[in-house]
Image 1: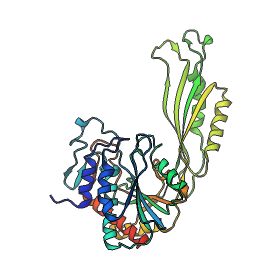
Image 2: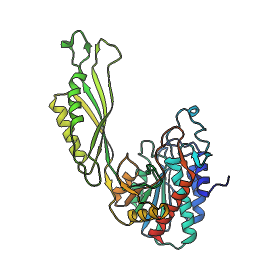
Image 3: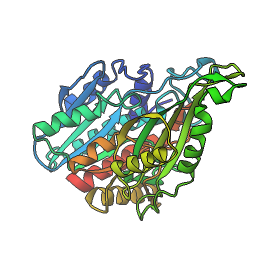
Image 4: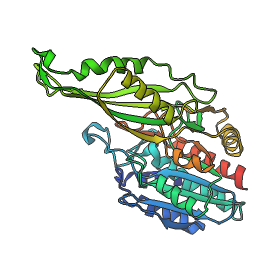
Length: 377
């Protein structure tokens, strides 16, 4: 079976078991394709994280493809129909960890650039690829640190396309033009351990904490807006006790998360949460972690180019959405760049037997190429 350049490169990337934060030579492979095209390679590694900045030309405007070579663990290999790091094609479908998230997109980046540069060697502006091996992990030493480095030396990104799997049912049926903010809390409610037969000698943190948690869960935080759904509060973990049925626990720990719109900010959320916890007279400790602020890319050159390219290649108009989790776009958008996410169907990501249709990878590469033509030719 003869494979396209995009599918062949995707297979070569999947063969490398780059479980976060490892890269396993993926970026060296990508460099072999980009350097002959006139890109300059710069390693911006921090800690155990591998980062690469590939740039062609030094003039504005700057278009960037952003992505990650790391993948989540495969889970039990015996549950896969084919080995997770052995790319396998059956009936137009490519199976393997990272096929959709997001080695397929990276392969499409590279082949789109090659075809575009073959036709437009003297194109307007600059093209770059920002690649990290730390998107699926803590996301501390990856794109965040690269953006800090670029900003410190005055490199400004005008347009950035993140290759996350944004499609829902059909290729390119959705463009993500923003993301909600993510704020997590780790709450510990302190009580006093004791025997269940003598509750007057103990303080039960479960009994004390549940009313406050119930109130937090019932709050309607905001109405959202034309870009974002209403802010949501979700409890993900509750733990208390030592397993004994006759012991009142001394503390209860609760993990929760806010996905918030631009109608709220981090400071306001924290203020309201603390007010409720204090209202119930709780003795507590609370640690906050801000994973990202909400961002939005309104109508403009990048969103318009992506919309037109998708319509031309697929014959259908995409939906513009901000739904879903976070991505590395949250580190790029605050620089003032226009940021969108556009990639394969996301139905199998992080699952056993992750897969993507090879015909869709080829069409995705064509869409990326057409976006470059709209913006830089």
